[in-house]
Amino acid sequence: MNTAQRYELFAEYEVRGHSPCYDEWCRGIASDTDVVDLIEQLPPDKRQPNLVLGAARYVGVEPSDYPGFKAWLTEHWVQVAEVASVRRTQTNEPGRAAVLLPVLARIPGPLSLIEVGASAGLCLYPDRYSYRYDDRVALDPGDEVSSVVLSCATSGNPPLPSGLPTVTARTGVDLNPLDVNDTDDVRSLECLIWPEQQHRLRRLRAAVGVARTDPPRLVAGDLLDTVADLVDATSSDTTAVVFGSAVLGYLDTDSRRAFEAMVRDLRCRWIANEGAGVLDAVAARLPEPPTANRGSFVVSLDGQPLAYAGAHGQSLDWIDGAAAHGF
Image 1 (tube, rainbow, N blue to C red):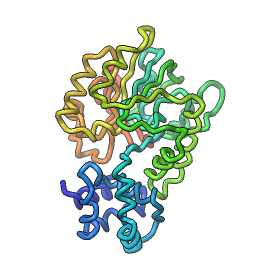
Image 2: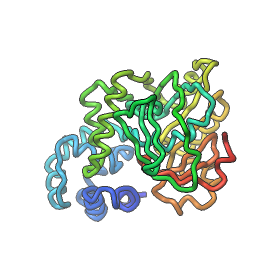
Image 3: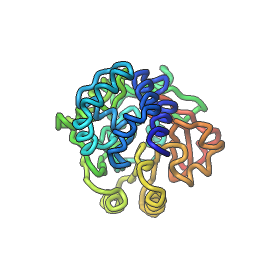
Image 4: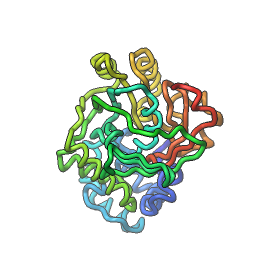
C-alpha cells in the first residue's frame, strides 16, 4: 500500500475511538499530498504512522487540529526526520502481558522467557504485575498489589489462571534494545503512546520502575540469528518460552516463515501475539477470516490460535474450543 493508504488504515483500524488527535492527524495526512511528500522523503521502513508521529512528539509537537499540526510539522520536519531516522517503532506495552498470562500460566515451569522484539523488555515481567480480568478475577504477585495493574476484558471463557508463573530467567532480543535506565530511551517509549492515553503512560512509567529494580538481559541482534543460541543456553531444569508481540509483522514474508520454521524445531514453546494475518499457519487455522477481526491481534501457542486480543492487551476473546489445543 502507498503512504496515504497506510495513514488512512492506521486511522480507521488503530486509533479511531482511542485517540481523536491521531485520528484527525492521520486522516488529514492521508488526503494531503504535501505532507505525504515530506514523509516519503524517509526510507520506506521509517514512514510508519506511529514512528513519524512519535518522532514529532519527541521533537515537541502538542495536540492540535490538523492545520496546526501541518504547520508545525512543515516547520520542524528536519528535526522530526532526524529522530525518525535513528528511532524505531518499539512500542513496549506492558498491558500485553495480560493476554499472554493465561497461556504462560499453563506451561509447566519454572520458565526461561525469551522475548523477540523486546524493546526495553517490559513484557518480561508477567510475574511482577497485578491483573484484573473483568473487574472480578484478581491476580497479584505474592500478597501485594504491584505498582503495575493490568486490566483486561474477556469473552469466550478463557482459562484464567489462579496464580502467576514462576520465572527464573528473562532475556530479550531486539535490533535496538532500549535501556530502562536511559532517559532518552524511556522518553522515546513515552512518545509512542497516543496523546490521550494517559492510563497507558502511567502504566508504562510504573513498568519501567519495576524493570529498573531487576533489569532484564537484552541482546542486540536479529531474531533469526540469535534466538536458537538463546534457547540452547537455557537451563534444562526450566521450560524455554519464546514469545513476542507485534514484531513479526515488521519482517518480510520469507523472514516470517523462516522464523516460524526455526522456532518450531527448537526446544521451547512459542507464543505469538501478532496481527490476525501476520502468520500464515495461524491465519489458516482461525475459525473465521482474519479480516473479520481486523485491528485485533491473535494469541497463538506453537502455531495454534487460541484467542483474539486487543492490541494493547485490553481485551481477550477466547476462541471456542481453543483450550483443547496446545497445552
